[in-house]
Length: 277
Ligand code: ADP
Image (cartoon, rainbow, N blue to C red; front, side, top):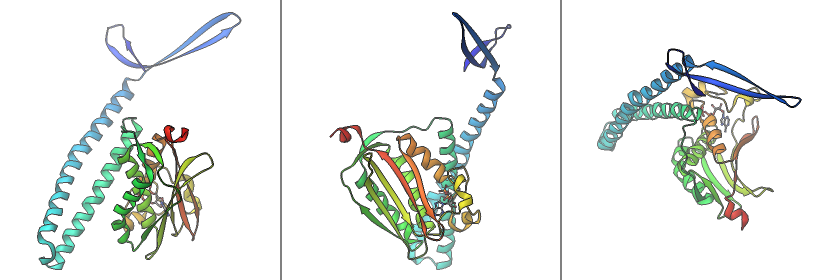
């Protein structure tokens, strides 16, 4: 993308592609020039829309959520049950809406290449254990327990902790949401033959239907739309998760069997210093 100048002196954005052709000992260049003013205008409008969503929707939502949280804490156990239930309902739905808005904003940021990652070397076993412990209260709502099965310790990976947290939380909450009440989700860490670290999240839920598998990492992809109402979720989680893990030079995959369960896997390269050691 470069800037062009019209005869009247005005500047406009253009797409320029140049290719070289060798004919004998002669070199020929061909150039294709496309005026992209309209596309740029659309992109600006989209950016403005996203920024509006960000401010006009997220800011009040955060404030409503905060107020509801405070109200719930203030009324506490003394409030009559019905009032508490209503507050809880409002609070839960606010959280759901916040998650959706944040997911849409993250998706747009990734698409625009504007997602920023604060990479640092982190010990992954402790990090995973901490995240799992924090997510146990979410799993409790579905009567699901998390079980750590680490076969390694002290493994160092170069990643952004907050973004990794977001990716793992998404897999853990999916595993909890799609497990039966009383079910167990096993979280494993091991090394593979290439000395990469493999983090697995295994559930014993319904598995992923064959027809849905090719779409699973797509945007707004859900095997069963009614699951959104029942279990919450936007169908954006896995799309974002994959992009995040790929930003750490890792990959995301899964194995699934209908009626038996699913295991999602992150493969991440161990940091250079540890690899050399
Ligand atoms: P959502 O926010 O809806 O959970 P995701 O992108 O995380 O979005 O997941 C997309 C869809 O993939 C889910 O709605 C569900 O249909 C399917 N899915 C994801 N994880 C699992 C799992 N562990 N077991 C069964 N289905 C799953």
